[in-house]
Image 1 (cartoon, one colour):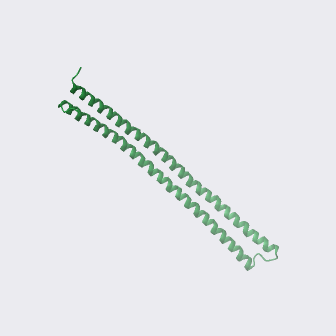
Image 2 (cartoon, one colour):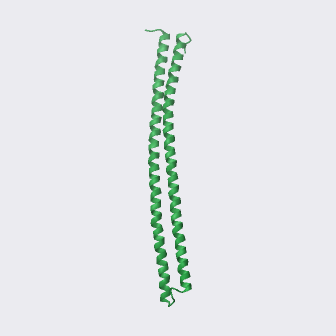
Image 3 (spheres, helix red, strand yellow):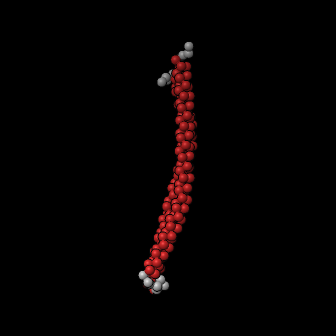
Length: 171
């Protein structure tokens, strides 16, 4: 059986090895977690980009619906004037039709604008997710490096403890 000093040195070596392995394992686990979160962020970015395209498409459909409704309103006004015996080409009739068309165009432009704003917000959201994914990957890499640094520190501390035990200082 070895001396007490040898036992203390062996114990310090074992503690150092366990500490190093634990530190590396923890760093690798944090890296995997960060990469998983980054993958989720990338998926969210893709969803946001798709939502931006969808917002524009929905805006185009809504704008077309506004134009159709405007045409219906103008036709309804013309029909009303004609049914009332008023010339649809009269100044008042033309002014009303023009006002309806201008109001409809304003509604259509507003609809297009709102869809563009929504799409831009979705694109910005996608950029945020992409940036988050990059940051998470950097954090994962840093966690792995920190694991190796922790392992080196555990080994250094174990070596110092073993040297101290060998010098008769004991723990």
